[in-house]
Length: 108
Length: 113
Image 1 (cartoon, each protein chain N blue to C red):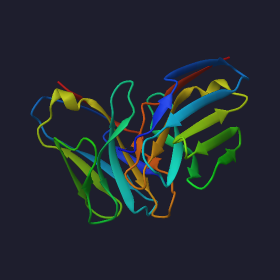
Image 2: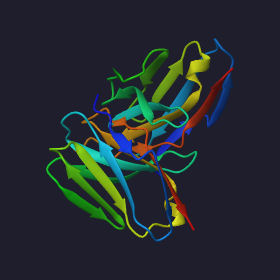
Image 3: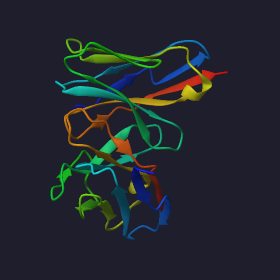
Image 4: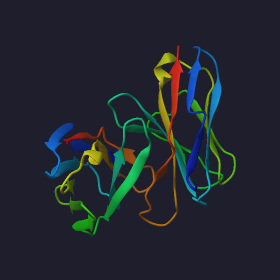
């Protein structure tokens, strides 16, 4: 299975702080994607990083990928209460497999 | 609005009943997927269709069947519902181009009693 596994399972921070979540996976990948899920809603695609990329930015999001360690991290800078959600990484060329996610709570 | 539409949004079934969950996308995506999400867990892939006319099993296909009716529609059928199938079901689609992200529907919350 190419399922990603997120760490930590839960993270609670104050508004304005940075949030870092990690993802580990087991097999070779073409790309790794991060998604956000607000409570009771579907997942929303945040960012994709290809296996030949080491870092990617999108607004307040920064994703890194270390293929030698089979790991990725998602950094959300200057967090806001609206960032409260679960975050998932997903891997796989076609049949995407998701981990259990990191539940982020940003306190106002 | 363009996206993935799932129906129904909520459903309660009795054990042994059958039903079909509908999914349609209007983005001309080639690939479509069905996932289930249980409380506090990630998504588990049930079935997927890489392109019109093809379907493949995912991680947890037992108890389910799928039909890729056309490029737009991908349905999931429970032939004889069991309490273990109580879950939230998500449909997703993806364009063919390398690295395309998934677009998810808003989910169907199914309870089997």
